[in-house]
Length: 410
Image 1: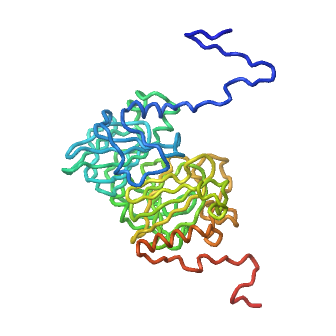
Image 2 (image 1 turned 90 degrees about the vertical axis):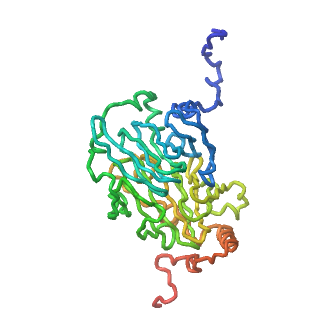
Image 3 (image 1 turned 180 degrees about the vertical axis):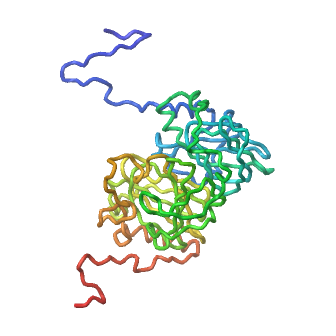
């Protein structure tokens, strides 16, 4: 059969040939087409120094000005967008069958939330640095209470839903009420500070649907990423969307560790930079002459970086070089973080990124990291007139099991 101008026919391969093109361009997914049809910019990259500098355009559906952000490595895993609310204005009322978390970049205001058939609207106030979540498929309206524009950064599970259902009318107009997510309780948006162990890994968790100020909220000691590191996981609105807030002490930096794509780190206090490189480059890419393949993203509030921007496991390492500690919030989207991924129920897992490579984890201990990392960090601190607090003992090799060390009884 032969091709005609109005129709292309499939041709069976000849003996010794393979069917198909061999090479082809990746087709856009439903969520990609949805973003393009919205008429606002779509920013793609490994990160951005400050989201405040991204271009915005009028967004008819939402009623403000905004931009989509699709960092490399997050495609299909979760979505991100920036929306500006006009001064003393409000966004359009909406509801949707995907989860949404909101970080206030600038401004102050209120949000109204209600369910189908509910006469009463639940309202709460927010300010710069507030973090809140909209219950699944609940009606909501976000209002700017100030004379200057407000700016919100929103993470969603829209790609996960749209790439399966591919019907925006259903996604935005489904009448179903998820009462188990939002029953209309009076204290639903009352901030809660109680800390409990998360049921999977035993890390510090806070059950709250609103954090009034994540920039200054108290964080419990964690120590998993660097000495003195602090961290908490807000569990919000019954979401599968996973996130946490963490802070490294001034003059100290994180161990490098590796994992697959999904996590985006958002700088909310201090300033710094992240190095990220594919696992195939090994643990010392500078020493091996492969520094040109290492990616770097600098940031300040509110900057972003994709921890693993391409396929496969990527090492990444975060450095605060400001006079105050580097505080970040990491957003993973739904069902992407290693402890939340699907697998065999009851399978034994480990806190992979917090355990050194020599012990079966994915973290590079300080004594095994590329020497260029420490040199660059100390030089960056010197330029900022900050003293390093990376104590020399952090770089000492710990004794192997049974090895005699100073003070051992011989």
